[in-house]
Amino acid sequence: MHSKKFKLEKFSSQILFVSLIIIYYLIGFYLIQQTSITSDESAYIGAAYSYIQGLGLNQEHPLFLKLIDSVVFNLFFPDNEASIPTINFILGQENIETRLAAFNVGYELLMKDSIAFNRIIFGLRFIHLFFNSLIFIWFYLYTFIFREINSIISIIFLILYTFSPSFYSHNFLITFDVSVSLYAMLFALSFSFFMKSFVRGGSKFLAAHFVLSFSLLFIAINVKFSNLVLIPIIGLTYAIYSIYLIIKRRRQKFLYITLLGSFSLLFQAILIALMYGWAFRNLPNTSLLNKFLNIYIQGIGMNLSTSKGIREPFVDGKFISTTAIDYLLKIFWFKENLVLLIIGVFLLLVFIGNMLFRKYSMQKIFKSYTNKETLLLISIVSMYPIIYLLISSSSRFIIGYRYFYPIIIFIYLLFAVLLFALHYRWKKYVLLVLLISYMYVGTIGIPQSLSYVNPVWSKEKWKLADDSTINWGQETQHAVEYLLQNKLLPENNKNTLIYQLFGVNISFVQYLELLSKNYKYPINIQSYYQSTLDLRNKEITKLPYKYLLIDSTVKQQIYVEKNNNLAASQNWNFLIKRKPIYSHNNIIYIYRIQ
Image: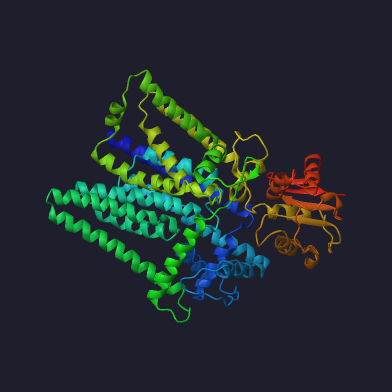
């Protein structure tokens, strides 16, 4: 009877797994089609293409995902070519020319053919969507094969991930922010299960845990350099356990763990060297060792120099320098699924209730849920988000909310574990209500895409934040489609439309060129190119144009300057009094000037 019940529960859990995977891909496919190319994607496409030629670009990030993109590009788009510019690439030195080259190559590849443009974007975005879906396979293995994680914990976590606006709005983009967080977490979990099995001994899955840990570490540290923080975590864990083995005089086990750890790290270095040797193989006068040491170290240096810089985000109505932790505390409450906040409050109330009314002491609660194995797991898994938060908290180079995904994903995991740990008769009913509500709120937020804000934020979106948190250039396509579908643009732009948008190298004119071909809409594209427009210093009402196209970034710039100069003040009055004839997601706007 118990066996039948277990099989039924396992079957039901597996059905839920499959359902979540299907939903994950449906959301991903929808957003791939609805999201214009964002700021960094063209650079990573250009970098991937450069690896095919052995003239690697974009060394400020590791190569793994870009190499996968390059393989896909070479297999499915072999006829799409671009010239890689001759740049003064000096090993050990950083220059802006090297950074911009990848953007230029990506631009050339994408703009050659409107049909190829859509195919390349879809193909490479699908690869990233697929790569970020492997988390489902990992949880399946550790839930139903290795039986290390309870199925309820897995399902709760995967629901939190699948219906998270933070992750579903980024997991398909040709960027690394989701992957860096997922694979750091998966490695931390696999490594903790490996250590648990090794300490306990006799596990038939010990080899599988080691291979998975090794593979996940390789992926994690080769997605973004920030994940190199995993190396000292491994070293610290091995060191503490080795000291314990020496004290206990378990020489054989000490030699075994030393060999495994040394082999793992050495083989990681060999694989990384081979990757760099391939990607940069046609650079002149460089040996494999030079490519690995100099370029890899230079990439780390570029990453560190960037992170030590200052970027002033839009916060509290102005562009100001702030720390990462302050930015997180201002943004978190408005960017996450509203029900996640409710879950957090609910768990806090349960904890306080246990302390006050059931007379649970901290020591009693601690003993109820922990043993030596659990403490080992918690110690290893919690090190990464804690260290990441400590290192990044004082940074003033704020690139957006995505910077905190490596912390957010661990919050989801913590909430999943805590919800499972509740021991109340009404637990399953509360869980059902919370998870259904979470899925509903997450679903209705899908059309917002990158600009998602939850109902707690009652103001206009542009007042919350800038850059990838709200506007990464993702709405351009919709504005161009509106203009073409309503036939608002003449063939020649003679004082018809003027524009200023977020800085993406494939922006309004580029989408106009591509979409006009698809719509067979006659356009003299050269007439739509314009000199740089700065609406902080030029009055809108004095522009000799019929329509104005702007986005949230421009609104922020005008708002900040409205008390500093007359032009910005006049423009702000225009924007608050004039209703746009078109707006999408409250991010991009078309105004009639005359």
